[in-house]
Every structure is written in C-alpha cells, then in structure tokens.
Image (cartoon, rainbow, N blue to C red; front, side):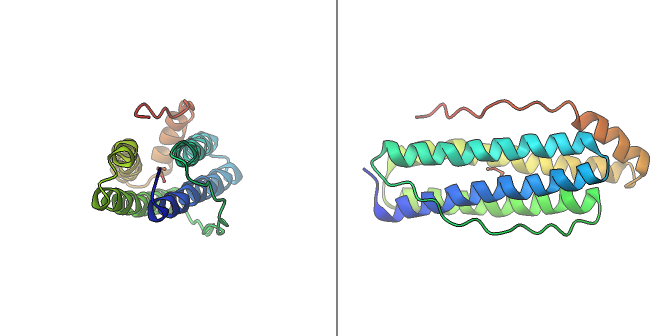
Length: 171
Ligand code: OFO
C-alpha cells in the first residue's frame, strides 16, 4: 500500500517525466530543423529515456496498490535560439527535476515509507547523471568558445548516442 499523498506526488512526477520527454523532443525538432542531426539524435534518445522514467513510476504506483493518473502535460517552451541556449535550458530543467525528486524522497522519509525510498533512490542517482550530462555539453561548447567548428564536432559525437532502456533494478 501507499499513502494518498505519496500516490498523488508520484502521479505528479510521472507527468513531469512525460513533460521532460515532450520538452526534449521539442529540442530534437529544433536541432533537426537546423540540420544538426547528431544533437537531434541525442535529444531523441533523451526523450525516450524520460518516457522510461515515467513508465517506471506508473508501474511502481500500480505495484503498491495505487492508481495511475494521467494528468495533462503542458506545452514546453520552444523558443530556442542556439545550441548553448538549449544546453542551458536542459541543465536548468534537470536541476528543477532534481528538486522534485528530493521533495518526493523527503515525503517518503517523513512517512517512513522505506519501499518508496528504495524505489526513489534510482531517481536520485539518475539525476546526478542528468545534471552531469547537461553541464558537460555546456562546458564542451564553452571550451570551443561557442564556435561553429565546436558545434559541428560535438554534433558528430552526439550522433553516437544509443538508446538503452532504463532498468529499475531496485523493485
Ligand atoms: Fe527523468 O530525468 Fe531528466 O528530467
């Protein structure tokens, strides 16, 4: 069983993860429109991973006897001006998501709901990687002084990113 409060927070987070997928897909579309197909691939893979994050929450809520709710997903900001603008928005978004995961973990700790804490630990760890990836993109582009050559080099690298389904090893 799970408390109504945690059930509702988890459903909210499921929606937030779907929002992340929507947001990153809009970034992939922007890169495609600029013929930066490596970054388009990178962000498409990112969107696929976000859908996994959402689905894992849905599965968990159902496993602990809760109801999965499908809340409305708002439209993302699609006013992108450059690769750096997108990378900075990615980092800001992931920092926000880290705060959401921390709030969820805090609520599970307050309730002494150990199974939900165990479930959420995967997300705590994942957020380290998410912020690290976004910071890495910003730093690399800064090193090249935001140059076109730097963008093309990074775009070629980003083409190699491959989708691997996220695995929730803790449930
Ligand atoms: Fe689901 O980690 Fe990004 O948002």
